[in-house]
Length: 257
Ligand SMILES: [Zn+2]
Image 1: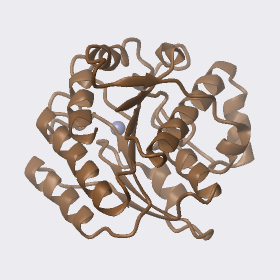
Image 2: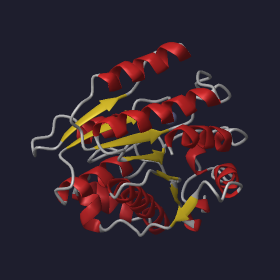
Image 3: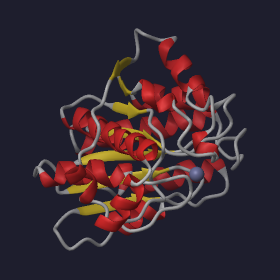
């Protein structure tokens, strides 16, 4: 499967928060580069102003742009999400190893280590090109992606997005909640995951084991194949234990790819 990555994502100088911490992506890329027969790394372009303004107000865009390094990296992360979405649309599953994350960025504000809403920017690009009309977003980060919800839910332009933030506090119930939701899905054009790994058993949320991430990936694969020709992609959100984030990302991709 395809991994979207750019060397610039290693640059941790844009902020001092946990998502920007030095070394956060090293474990992920080490696990990916150890399996060249399974993963192919592809490089994204920077998202354009027009791409970003589909999801954000002009003032928010200009506020981020006032910090040149932050803007460069946030626009490149959004471009990574777009690359993953386009790859998925063309028929190949993709995982975007990007930062800064995006699911707490709303149209005119942001918090939680996020600046531009990578998920919304990527989906709205495909929608603007009339490639998709309905999408499903599974957000399995520990934290509810309020930015995804604020931008993507209840739109008035004909784009319909179903978003699941599982709430179960027991791991088997969590998987069951995701499966039941997907069983009731029909008629969407693409599956996307806001893939945070801070719900991991050795991370902040202390809930999901690596095999649970494999099962989440497998559910995404099976149901996207049932509904929308297997079109599916995932983009990195949270996940802060550098010792295990590579293991958990690989576990997810084993089921997903
Ligand atoms: Zn989180």
